[in-house]
Image (cartoon, rainbow, N blue to C red; front, side, top):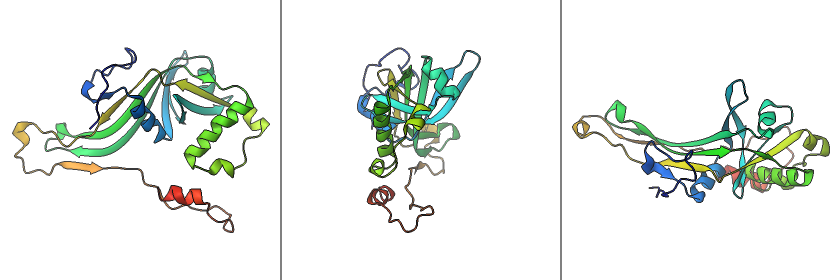
Length: 218
């Protein structure tokens, strides 16, 4: 069971609903980000509010994303807009004896703040190398890196994890006392992401790299 930390970084990150599930430890936050490939970024562009999914990765105490310079999300973020970012892993469905007592086991993170741009091709490439290692450790040594034209058309951005909180639920069914004797099955249906076998493209003569094999069996 998660051991919560007592202090939220800010009033925005203080968990009010089920505060006993709150966790403000950096290790918990880092693990949730590191096991995720997609985050959802909510922002207001002055006319409307949007929530956009995008690939993400972490380096040190920052969350990174990248995107086309011409994209709406990139333009808004480069203007210093305040955002809220959400990441969620569903680890199981908790089936109770009462419909209203059903719940989920999950790990979620919410991050607040504003993004900043990574400047210079050298630093952009270094950040993208970390992303490539997240996709498959060792891939950066084989794939062609971005060239000057590609890098010029791409923004790499990061946001500090200083204002963030996680919420973790890992529980068995909790039924009301009057429901405990109902003849209804109760329990947990675990859920997990499973790696599949690699599917080669039109390059059958090229052996599957060791790092791809390791990824498939992780």
